[in-house]
Each structure stands twice: as structure tokens, then as C-alpha cells.
Amino acid sequence: MKVVVTLACVLGLALFVVCSATFTPATGGPSDAEQTTEVMRNALRGRRWIEFKEGERAWLTEKQIQQLINAKAHFMDVTDHPGLRPIDGLTSSTLPDVLIPRHPESIDKLLKELSAEQIGQTITDLSQLYTRFYTSTTGVEGAKLLHSKYSEFARNQSHISVRFFEHTWPQPSVIARIEGTGENAHELVILGGHEDSVGFSTTGRSPGADDDASGSSSVLEVFRVLASNGFRGSRSIEFHAYAAEEVGLLGSQAIASTYQKEGKVVAGMMQLDMVGYVNNNDPVFGIVTDYVNESLTQFVRELAQEYTHLPVKNTKCGYGCSDHASWTKAGYPSAFPFETDFSNINPNIHSPQDTLDKISTEHAREFAKVALAFLVELSTQ
Ligand code: BES
Ligand code: ZN
Image (cartoon, rainbow, N blue to C red):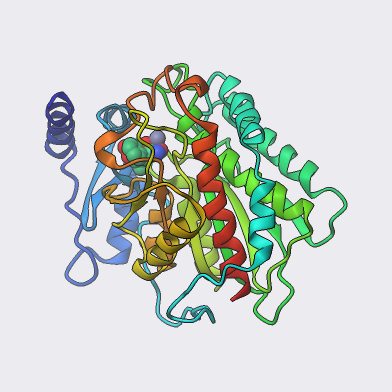
């Protein structure tokens, strides 16, 4: 109730004071030139353009955005990519329309190597940083830490590259890539998670163990196992650690938008954001069903049934709740498995209490298993 009231107040304030625009999409709205002027004027006032749902936008100050985060509101900051949408003519992937797990023996062999201890070690290293807020120096250190772990696991393998994706703010995203071997090597299968964290304020302690060291550490662990076994698909595989998710999906929007402009083909994207929390000793494998691609999600459901013993439970996350939404917005198919269902969420996120002792690395490993199967299956069929 408190959350609802706070949120209503924040939104009320925002919409009343700023009331710059209820965004009018496509026809009938302001011209491009008018919009550009509007964007520049507000940007100069230090405001950001926040989208609460499709077509509902307002210009907010940084302080108002922090209030939104504290009220656990879902939103996207669309200031940098106001026109991101699916575009015609983007080549679609050569994946079959209906995906069926083929379950090659190689997957079982690889899954055995996934280590809960490794996931725990990376969570420890990331959550020891005071905060991984996207403008903080320790936030930059978090990105560097992941980059160096990726580089170490990629050592001496010329078909693997690791790079920073720089942004207009201090924290870069990190991208590791295993080059495909087939005719469709230009097509991508992506596994992502976010590297940043947020606390009660921009300068507060924010270990972000579950949200989302658990996801980005699991993504790294899948990479470690595939790389050390010399695995290559016919499609290329990318591992993404997104900067600045917590302030409105900024890093993933920048990457999805760049890939779209470059005409890149994405066969499928899976987001791991919060994979370590078990509620009441009753573990489930949650699968988000909103703002995702339905057939890709069905495939993930089948993979979960195949590779974990956890009961699979559908759940909804709401508008713009994690980086998969940036890919959906750009017209790419995405899926989002989740640690629990949304009626049982981890109460510690976005606070100093989001620490490793409150989550389970064994639970995270179950998600890494499904993610590994996803990459092998999608990159080879
Ligand atoms: N990991 C969360 C998403 C989340 C939050 C899932 C609560 C389940 C329960 C993500 O990092 C997050 O905090 N997202 C924000 C939206 C973002 C665009 C500011 C949220 O959901 O409040
Ligand atoms: Zn979060």
C-alpha cells in the first residue's frame, strides 16, 4: 500500500509539475524538429524523458527518478533513444519457427561443469564494491572486474573477443563474443545480465548481490564453461553485462539501438536478472510472460523442464522491468527467466541488505544450466 501511495505521489508530482507531454506516437504528434527542440530544452534543464508505458512519457529530474526507483516503479529512460522501435526490413534469423529442444549429449557434459562456487566467487567480488551505480568509480571498477574475468577465461582463443561498449556516462558495458563457424555466423544469440546496482540514494551502499550480481555472474559462468571446452556454434554467441539498467535500461537500449542501426540479426536474447533468491524453501523456476517473445519463451519453458527439476511457474514483471525489454522494443526476440514468481520477490533488492548470504548459488546454477542449453541449442539449430 505504502509503495502504491508513494508511487502515486511521485507520478502525480511528476505529471503535474513537469507535465511536458503525454507522448503522442507516430502520426498527429509533434514534428521531428519540434521533438528535437523539446529534447534539447529539457536535456539542458537536466531532465530525462521517462516512459512509464508505451506512449506515456514525462520529463523528470534525477531526484524524481531516484524517487521512482525507491517506489519500485517500472520505467524506461528513453531520452537517448526516443524512437527505438521495431523496423521493417531488418533481416530475421534463419531459426525455424517452432523450436524443439534437441538435447544433444554435449549439453549434459557441459552442464556438469557449471560451478555454484564460481558463481558465488564472482558475486562476492562484485558485491564487495561499495556500489556499482552507473556514475560511480566503483561502478566502473565492477565493469573492469567483469572484463578481466572474461579476458582471463578467453585466454589464447582467437575466436573469442572481449570488449567494453562505452557509453556517454562513466560505466561501460562489457561484451564477450564467441565467433560462430557457420554461414549464419553473422546471426547472434545473446545472454545478458546487468552489472550496475542501485541503493536508497545515488551514493548509498548497494551490494546488489541478487540484483544483479547473481545474473551477471551466472552469465560469466556459462561463458567460462563454453570457452574452456572450445564450444562454438554455427551462429555467434555474445555475453553482455549491461551498464545502467537500474536508471531506466540505458546500457541495453544503447546496445540494442546500435545493433539495429548496424542491421545485426539477433536470433534470440535471454536476460538473467535476479536468479539467486529462494522464497520459503520453495524454489521455483519463474518465466516472465510479458514484454517477451512468446515462442522463444515457450522454448525456454521446455528447456527448463528438460534441464532442471524445479517447478516452472509463469509470472509477469510489468513494463520495462529489465534489459530484455530493450531488445523487445527494438524488435528482437527476448526471453526472461526469473528466480521466483513476482508475488514472492526478494525484499532486499536496492538496499544494503542485498547480500550473498541471503541468496542461493545453487539456485543460480539452475538458471545457468538453462541458459547454457539455450545458447547451445539456438546457436546450432
Ligand atoms: N532486477 C530488477 C527487476 C525486478 C524488480 C524484478 C523487482 C523483480 C522484482 C531491475 O534491476 C529493476 O530494479 N528494475 C526496475 C525498473 C528499472 C527500469 C528502473 C524495477 O523493476 O523497479
Ligand atoms: Zn534492480
